Image (tube, rainbow, N blue to C red; front, side, top):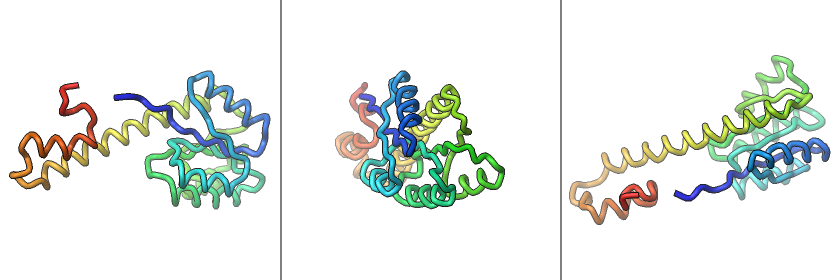
Length: 169
């Protein structure tokens, strides 16, 4: 199966920090799409479905919470939203998680921590996608009529979910 480069959306108003994060992830073979404005971030999420969103809570953390909720409304459930902020108070972290963030990265930014959390999120995304495919196959097998279970029919039905599974690859 051909691997595709994951889409990582970086929402950060500070140009220097955007460039630092992009450089750090680029050294790991990952590409980022940078967005400064919150409105463009939601639009990007809706149309491109990134695997990971890295989000600074922006100037006011209340705006960042609304942004997380708006992005979550259009993102797939398995997409990770990693919040970057210096506002690491317990209540802020709880609100960020309730809004839909999957992890919190504290400023000042430790690039190794950021890269590690991005890598873990990508691995979790892959595991979630694999589990979803397996679940769909189980559902298909349990709900397919016996007459449709001949090799040609089942191959045509299952192949879109599991590329290479029926071709001997």
